[in-house]
Image (cartoon, rainbow, N blue to C red; front, side, top):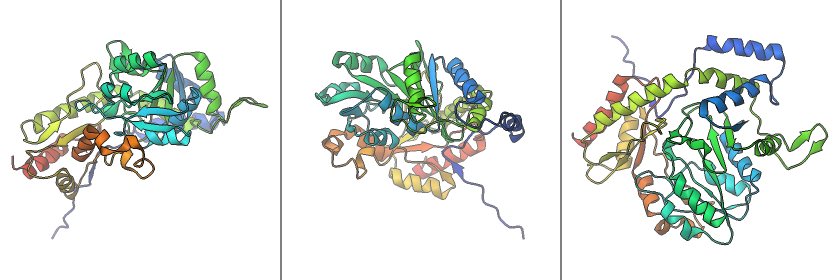
Length: 376
């Protein structure tokens, strides 16, 4: 009697990895250079390659996106209060607390799940110095309206663009908006360097300040000009990023096909809402969130468990809200009455698996579980 083998679990995302043999020459070059970190040749090549690919003027690499957020706030000398979203990964707000800044949570738009520009002005106080929106799931914020508000009140804008690698608007890269934009290259992102991140800025002087801050504040061997941190990306991560860039367009093409497959398969299931598709010019298909709403016969958490039981490791992303965690929930802006749209989304969302190697039969399996659970 043959032993029954269960299929391996399907995770919400998987890192995209090139063949190991393609990475070996990069490692050999690092060993030959004997330059492992501190802005080595691969680090410098990777910064320029990203600027060229993304369509931005200046970019500073970091060891991860969280340190990049912390440093972005220090770069602009942000203090006081910063308006931000409760619907994000905790690093968004944590970066504020690490800098002694008070986050002020504002509700989100029900269509995009991004920070709602209609609610920003009411949250501005004399202590407000900046706005930190998030391009949630890679869908661009309403950058034009946010910029207008910021200009009217003399505020800085730092975009948490962790999900927005390669996202374009009709006027070019979404990363060119705001005073700074911060990317994550974590292994689960559309584009990864195992761990990594970056700050995008507009001018060489700001880039120089960022470079000082990410290297303990050193200006030269004997001069420390700021209380910086060790945020440098290693040569190994930079080399891996250069290799990953070669395959990013193909990865995005595959993600687009998976997104389309889901939308066709889930259409017509009562109580299952796919977020509106981003326009052709803007999308990077970073995530595939659905909202489990009234009309579906079971709760979001029941469906989540059903997916888990069928080997589908989806995520309730973002649940709970940042504002519900202990270090934030006592703040006046964290009250549920202040954040009804965000609270509803957090209670309804499930992000389904999406990554380049996800196969059509696996997508059909996921869709089938959702349909069967719903009686469709």
